[in-house]
Amino acid sequence: MTEQIQYHRGNLGWIEVICGSMFSGKSEELIRRLRRAQIARQRVQIFKPKLDARYSQDHIVSHSDMKIKAQLVLAAAEILDLVDKRTQVIGIDEGQFFDLRLVAVCNELADAGKRVIVAGLDQDFRGRPFDPMPQLLSVGEYITKTLAICVRCGAPANRTQRLVEGADRLLLGSAGAYEARCRLCFEPPE
Ligand code: ADP
Ligand code: ZN
Image 1 (cartoon, rainbow, N blue to C red):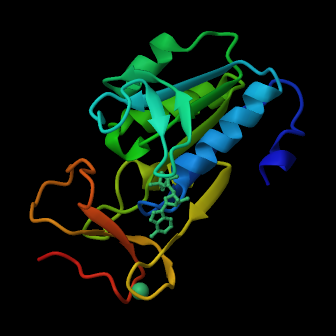
Image 2: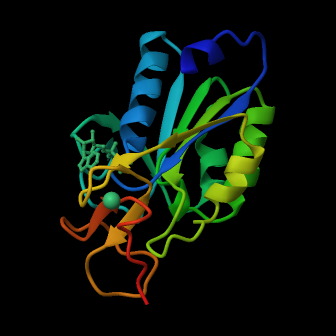
């Protein structure tokens, strides 16, 4: 599908959304698309929210250890300040950790002719839609839903099970804090 997208001509921008549970391959897929754009010598800029200091600071790193360099931003609006006007492709990881302004920012960039690719969790640890991903799904041109493998039963998994106590929506992935589960094996926290 991504290959097809490349056939767009002229100054037309658009939004691609990659979403699913943890371990579903969102970062891998984002990195794959961005690498291909870099190989094609397109101008690429990559952003991620500053709060996620889990792995290497200034890289997007997948659970399978794929890596790509990224710029850290504190808020969605900052992306607009940092984007060079010659940039053709913009990658954004961990979209769910940005404020709702991310939707307007992505729209503005796509309107300006840029290919915008956003990856993020579609659900929080309770299985509820994780803003601003639902809003991006509604305005984006291309949607990819990725699935993990349920660690309990092996079925396709689109839920993220939190394995430790805590009511905060934001609990950064210390190893072993989350696992992928299918809808039947998922146990929503109280
Ligand atoms: P995401 O960004 O969606 O969290 P990543 O792209 O970082 O996912 O990682 C995907 C990789 O995670 C897979 O290729 C695989 O190596 C690893 N992985 C670990 N647990 C699982 C699982 N339960 N199902 C699928 N992949 C898993
Ligand atoms: Zn299961």
